[in-house]
Structure formats: structure tokens, C-alpha cells
Image (cartoon, rainbow, N blue to C red):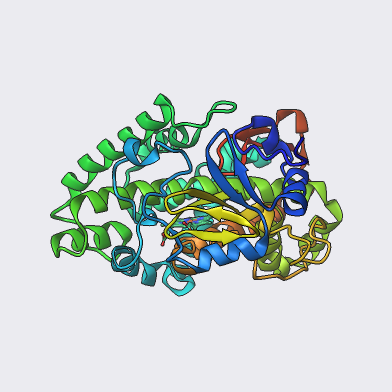
Length: 390
Ligand code: HEM
């Protein structure tokens, strides 16, 4: 009987996967997950190698872990491509996603965060995810691609449909595919509506200009819109919920942060390391490779278990200690290498602004643990509901 029981499709597993990942690191670090038919890498060194060696661990055909993902999710998202196609598309967006490029929207984000928080302050209770964190990232990315306010709930609902998995569901279901199809159809209409007019310096302008000038094909533009709407939304929402939860679990650390607001950036890095919102990222094996005695064959699917790597005791001292002063910048919560998260600076900015405003208003919130609910997905990790009183 194996000492390892890794099951990223088991809902119960998501509540506390860390002991299972430790067992895998100790006993079977390059683990074959039979029900899904793919490998899981759990050590920091191996995950880092896979991120770096983009010729052996490729993204083409690796949109999602599920075996049938390529057939069922046909729009070409650039996250699922390799150089030179990937380089050609990514470089179009990179300049505006830097901290400098984003600094001009910080005040706007702050006003949005305040507007979401303020109505609840007098009530003494709110749901930090369902009343606030689920709205802000969608609002920000919608603004960048000109999705009107009236459509945001729909788009967010489809993104939720795309990622939701029933307990032990290892293939894509009807709900997932229809979420994706609805997003694709919506963005087809959206690009037709804005095609001629959008030439600004926001993300929509970049996409439309790229299409007009032949730097991106039309399907690539639709794929990029879907990618931005999903990636820009789900993981940041979940990071905010994870941070609220971990600060509440460690009230002495929360107090340190309240007393020293300048620690906010290192606190966010520690939450990203300790309980990041992207659990597993997927690759395909591009050429046969051996890892720790296991033979991975060309075409195999591989999950890079980021949250396990970030708790690897060979990399971090006391990895299970949550320490907002730790200051480690080498976690892989945003991936690493050529595909590393395009929205990392934006996610950090949104999370910082939210906690600056939240902790000013309600520093001593209490979480009602019985009301916590999780999203269940092999990649996205975090809560859909975090009810608090204060
Ligand atoms: C806490 C929030 C976030 C987390 C934890 C996160 C995590 C990640 C990770 C791990 C990757 C690497 C994927 C790979 O190697 O295949 C990635 C890529 C990506 N992320 Fe994020 N992300 C977050 C927020 C965002 C935001 C706000 C945006 C929106 C603008 C975004 C857009 C993207 C895109 C477009 C890619 C693909 C980059 C490429 O293939 O070159 N992400 N993200």
C-alpha cells in the first residue's frame, strides 16, 4: 500500500493537501496519478527545473490537466503555446503589465476597493470573498478589456463554470465546456463590436491592433481574452481569501502587519508561498526524460505542484511556519521562466490595496469557520465564501 495519497480531484483533499504533499515529497516525489493518467512533480527542485526547461516540458497541448482538454477547449490561448508563437504574443502585453505600467490605475483600484468595503463596515459582518474579493479583480480586468459593468456577473459566472469540478471529476464536464463556449461566444461578439474602434493603450486596444496588423490571428485574440478574463479573475480573488484566512489563523502576525503596514509586500509574498492560489500548473513532456528514476515519455502530461514545492523542507527552513517577515522571493506561486504569470504585478497590487484598506477599517475580524466554502479545481485554490464578523 503506497504511503502517498495525492488526489487533486478529491474535494476533501483541498481542505488540507499539505500533509499529502509532504508524504509525496518524502516517499514518491515524481508521482503517477492513475485516475487522471498524469505525473505530479512535488519537489521544489523538480518543479523549478520543469518551469525552466521549456524544451523538455512544453505548453503546447497543455491547456489543462484533463486528457480531453485540447479537443474540448479549442481556442488557442497563448499560455498553451511555445516559442516562437508564445514569444510573439506575450511580448505584446508585457510592457503594460509591469508595476510602472500599472501604477496609473492604483488610485482607481483603491476607490473600487473602498466602495466594495464601506457599505459593510457599519453592519459588522460581511463575506470577504462573496461581497468583495470576487468583484474587484473582475472589475479591473473588465476595465482593461472594456467589458461593461452590466456584463461582469455573466463573465465571472462563466469563468466559475469553466473551473468548477465535481468531487473526483477527472475529465471536463458539460458545465466546464459550456462556461468556455459562453466565454468564447461573448468575446466573439465583443471583438466584433470593438474591432474597428479600439486602438487605445489598454489591453483591448493592444489586442485589436495586434489583430489588425496581423501580429495575432482572430482565434488567438479570442483565446487571449478568455485567458485574461479567467486568469485575471479567479486566482486573485482566491489569493485575497487565502490571505484573510491565514492572517486570521495567525492573529499575532496580523497584529504585526496592522502595526507595521510597510510589511504588506512581504506579507503577501509569504501568503503566496504558504498558501498560494494556483495549486498545479500543467505541462506536456516534449522529449523523453528521466526524473528520480521515473521515465516520463514524450506526450505525457505533467502537473507541477506549486503549493508543494513552496513547502519543500529542502528549500525552506520551517516551511510550515507562516511568517510574514520571511521575505522569500523565490517561491513559484506565479510560476517561473518564460510563462511566469503575466499578471503578477497586478495581482500583488490588487491584494496590497485590498489589505491596506481592509486592515484600516476592520483589523480584528473573526472568521465564521462553519461558513467557509471552497472552489474545487486542480489548479485554482481558495475560498468562494469567507464570512467575517467584526
Ligand atoms: C494571485 C493571483 C495569480 C496567480 C497565483 C497566478 C498564477 C499564475 C501561474 C502559476 C502562471 C504560470 C502558468 C504556466 O507556467 O504555464 C500564470 C500565468 C499567467 N497568468 Fe497568472 N496568476 C495570478 C494572477 C493573474 C492576473 C491578475 C492575470 C491578468 C492579467 C494573470 C494572467 C496570466 C497569464 C496571461 C498567464 C500566462 C502567461 C504565459 O503563458 O506567458 N494572472 N499565472
